[in-house]
Each structure stands twice: as C-alpha cells, then as structure tokens.
Image 1 (cartoon, helix red, strand yellow):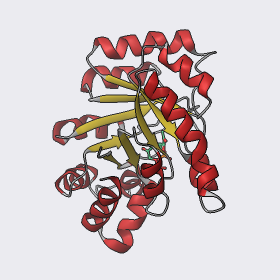
Image 2 (image 1 turned 90 degrees about the vertical axis):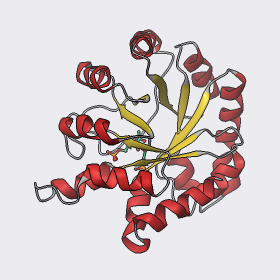
Image 3 (image 1 turned 180 degrees about the vertical axis):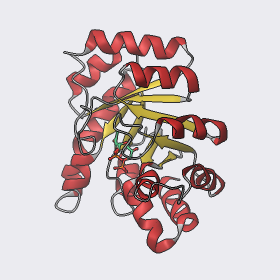
Length: 238
Ligand SMILES: CC(=O)[C@@H](O)[C@H](O)COP(=O)(O)O
Ligand SMILES: NCC(=O)COP(=O)(O)O
C-alpha cells in the first residue's frame, strides 16, 4: 500500500513572514507541491500567526485540489476556520498557544469528553478527523472511543532515537499502529520525519495511510530543489 505524502508548508510561510511581503508565495508553493506529486497540503495555523496566517487558510482552500489538512488546537478560532473552509481532514493537536513546535500527543483519557465533542462537530461538517497521539496503547484505545477517524502518531521520539537504534526506535510505533488498525482507526504520522528516517518507518508500519512532512522536506529543497525533493520523499513511500 502506498502511503500518502502531505507537504506541510508552515516553513514557507515562516520565510515569507521574515520580510512581511509575499515572497515566497505560500499559495504558489502549495500548488507546485501538488504538481510535483504531493498527495496533500498540511498547515498548522497557530494562534500567533507566526507562519500560516488566517488569510492563508482561506487562500489555500481556493487552490488545494488534493487533500487539505488543517492541524491545530481545537479552540473556537480553529473550529470556525474548519467550518468555513471545510478541509478534507482536521488534525487535532494539544498544543498550548506559544509552544515552539508540537511536542506531545493528546491525553485521550483526561480529554475524552472534550475530544468527543469537537470530533462530533467536525464530522457533522463532513470533515475527516485525526488526533495527534503518542504510542501508548491505552491512549490509543481511548482515542477509538472518541469517534475519531484516524490517529497521527507523533514521530518526534522516533526521529530522535533513529540514529542510535532504529529497531528500538520504531518498535512502539509498530505496536501502536497494529492496535489502532485492529480498532478500525486510520494511521497517519508526522513530526521530524526526513529523507534519512522515513523509509524504515514506512517499511515497519504496513498500515501507514499518510505522513505529513514540513521542516525536513523544505530544508532538503534548499539543496535538491522542491520538485526533486517531493519526488525523493514520494519514492520512499511507494
Ligand atoms: C502537529 C505537528 O506535528 C507539527 O509538526 C506541526 O504541524 C509543526 O508545527 P510547526 O511548523 O509550527 O513546528
Ligand atoms: N503533522 C506533522 C507535520 O505536519 C510536519 O511536521 P514537521 O515535518 O515539520 O516536523
């Protein structure tokens, strides 16, 4: 089974915002990623608009023809953006407002009622839902009872441990994915996946539906060019 590649364009917006103008153009880059073979576009419109702005969310909606995936903490603003732009997928992330980057998954036991409520809302608008989660099997079992369609495995710890021992690094993800699959959940993954660690992750998780990749992919594009880079990542997912 081929795994879908959703390109996260947050870092393009970071670069653009550094000068306050429109270079590089986030909409054009998203369109080009699709032309080069990306199966989706991911954004994470943080409340402080440090990269993706509210306007970007609407502008991208007009051009994305593959799968539009909006990530974020499900506060009123996020839910309103989802309601008005109707992305194919909303990925719920438990980030507090000023965190440097996403670094933890949901506590699906403590947040069960809250998650149930927002997931039901998003699904009533026809949006597929996913929740960002770590590999704890008990948390995955509780994810299933929220009504969510998919989980997104937080791959930060895998990326960190990969160089030291890739077999040990991937083992909890294999177990988590198997349990999620048995529970009928789709499986996404993301955070710090790269040209170095992606192939082994994909080979180890037979049920992997989709990965979203931004930081490493955009950095690789500086050396290989965006078109080549998208092709390189795609080849690792076939
Ligand atoms: C949800 C997730 O895993 C993040 O990787 C996120 O989308 C990246 O956010 P930043 O680009 O703001 O670090
Ligand atoms: N959901 C993860 C994502 O979109 C990209 O994370 P990263 O590749 O920027 O670490």
